[in-house]
Amino acid sequence: MPAKRTRPRFQPKPRGRKPKRSSWRFVLWLAVLALAVPALLLFLPTRQQPKLTPREGLALRDARSWGYQLQNVTQRTIPDALDLLVVDYSRDGSERRVFSREDVERLRTRTDGSKRIVLAYMSIGEAESYRYYWQSGWAPGSPSWLGPENAEWKGNYPVRYWEPGWWNIIMPPADAADQNRLQRIALSFRPGPRPYLDRIIDAGFDGVYLDRIDAYDHWAAENKDAMAQMVRFVSAISAYAKGRRAGFLVVPQNGEELLRLPAYRRVIDGIAKEDLVYGVKGDGQPNEAGITKTGIRDLNLLKAEGRPVFVVEYLSEPTQRADALKQLAREGYVVHFAKRDLHQVPE
Image 1 (tube, rainbow, N blue to C red):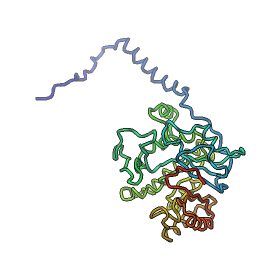
Image 2 (cartoon, rainbow, N blue to C red):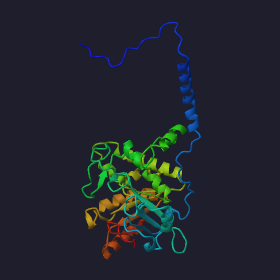
Image 3 (cartoon, rainbow, N blue to C red):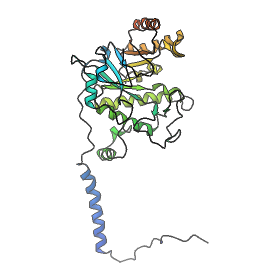
Image 4 (spheres, rainbow, N blue to C red):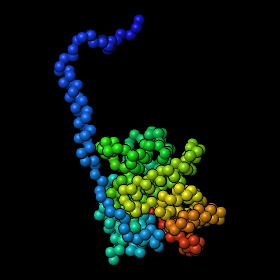
């Protein structure tokens, strides 16, 4: 027996029967609304972003000293001698304690009134469970771009950074620049928090310090294009940020293999490298000569084009520091020594 219909069959109108006048009025009003609403939207203001002047001050290539501190940052303890400072965009990673534009300006200003460069740390290869974007129901595989927890760093999860869901957390959709005005208006009213990169730009930072660039290693078996996808991701970040604020700096950390690709070198302003001489096998452990040599060879591809290389070695023993400094100063790199948890005032 066939299922009982829940909707009547379509009945054609009898020939010669005129529609009621009220029906035509209703159709006419719908047509007017369909034309009027889009026209009105064109005059509605979109969610305004702060107007930002082009970046001014010290050129990145002129920085002769740098510091890297992600915890316990206060303006009064930052040494005046630092030309470049890398901090988190929040005092403790949370949304509640983000640095305001006034805070960032204080970090930039030295006691003599001159300005240093301040970059905001941003991980683009891992999601962090203490960030504003994290949702309580998330688990590896849900959302689809979220990978398994990093065994060495609790609360950090490698991400499939090529998936739109992760892109939209870091920055507006890849095709946002190509949207027409109506689409951009709709996008400006979409629910959810503002993208991470917009928050950093609006806070007045001079640029971003991109971490977990080397996450492509984690996904190599799953995605043969993982390296190329990382280049595409960094390129999109650079284009969007520089489009919003002229002179905005993009400095990735690690992943120096990508410097072999001219397309990657073109979109970054410098590079930072951890553990170039010591630390691959553990803090204080010297690296194999081949590892250091290969790293230097890759880093020098960017240096040869006039862009700086910053190195951080997690060393405290004076003899090891002297050895690392001797090797790295010979290459013209800007060297910084720190503890791995990055909670102390930069030396």
